[in-house]
Image 1: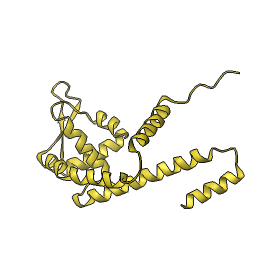
Image 2: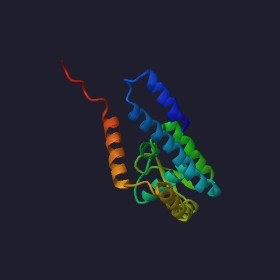
Image 3: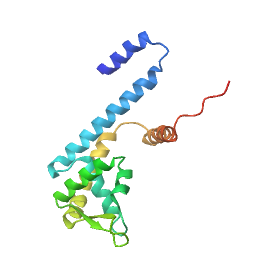
Amino acid sequence: MPFEQDIAHFLEHHPEAPGQAIVATRLLMRAATLMREHLDQALEPHGLAMRDYLALAIISLHEAQTLRPSDLSVSLDATRTQITRLIDGLVDKGLVLRLHSTEDRRALQLRLTEDGGRLVAAVAPQVHAAYQQAWADTGDLEATLQSLRRINQRLQSGPEPEDAP
């Protein structure tokens, strides 16, 4: 891959740099982009992108309880603005309803419409197949999951304190 050649060239000038960590990070970022594109392609015939599908799937899991836009924001690692835009699009497509909370009229709740529920059910097998296709022949997926979880936990907890001299 061309970026690996660029990184190798960079490392020639900066031998102290953590080469494998840099390459691994770049590969992870590239894989995330390619994964999103792969899943978006599977969803395109249905007029959805991956984030749309994830939002619909999460909302569908909360039919018996309240799901606020802020809850969805946390689940999707999205800003308030991004979630507002996302929900606006799903409402415009007739897939989601914004309802005022019965406990607090200022709060909004999200619900799938019947069309939204049907679409999630119809598209889920195609999304699952796309996931399986993307992860096929990648080796020990459980070990990969453990490594990704450790990286996420380390980054979420922030930098470790440096040893005092």
